[in-house]
Image (cartoon, rainbow, N blue to C red; front, side, top):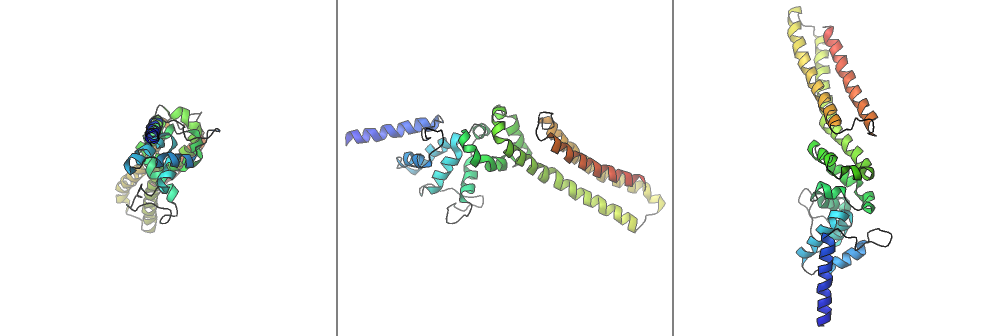
Amino acid sequence: MRLQILSTLYLKEMVKIMAGEGDTFFHDTAGNPNNADLARFAASFENAAERKKVLEDVAKKDAYSAAMVMLDDPTIRLKDDAGVEITRATHADAEEQVLKQVLRKLSVEDKLTQHQAQYPHLQDAIAEDMSRNTATFEKYLNDDKYSSAQPRIINAQRKARQAIYTREYLQPFNIESKRMRDFMRNLIATPPPTSAIPQIKIQAQSMVTELKTLRRDYEKLCRKNDLLAASSPDAPRIQTELNRMEQVISGYNNKIATL
């Protein structure tokens, strides 16, 4: 009995050490994580807080595996963004929800240095995390580990950049463009007196300036992070996006010139 207790204590300490060091102690001979083995190791910790801490350490290099074990462990409770406990019974997308919560707690460096076998599961989760806002996106791109991780997360990077472009630049650009279009249509429907034209042009130019600012800021973001560099696989698409914005701006400038 005493030897059994010592053996159990030794196992726990070894698991703590290996989890803390990002060891692949629960991976198979092919280098793929075995979630059943991880769950068995985690179950050796009777204390739920201690068990969760070990899995959180594992998540620093194997987020998907740690998240799946947490999801199926009744002693560990993770909540979604609305504060509802995530379970397979209550959430159709339980795996995605748990992975998102686990991933959010990791540093950018930990996210970029996940074991390669995890990437098929992490692409969407990393893309969502990268695209939270421009600052988060740039943290990824400027991290020391980004260059070595980029080949494995290039699809995530593309999805994140597209999400940021759409949410923070294209959508505001389209809103301002619609305001400008409606403004010009009203001028055609109700022509103003000649004396009012100079002031109307100033007003119209200020609206165009909003469009120019959005385009300029997007280009600045891309150039600052080398997304428009010749070596960037996204450069052609980004240039097309910038050209389309420029065409809209030029079109409005031409219309203002004819007022």
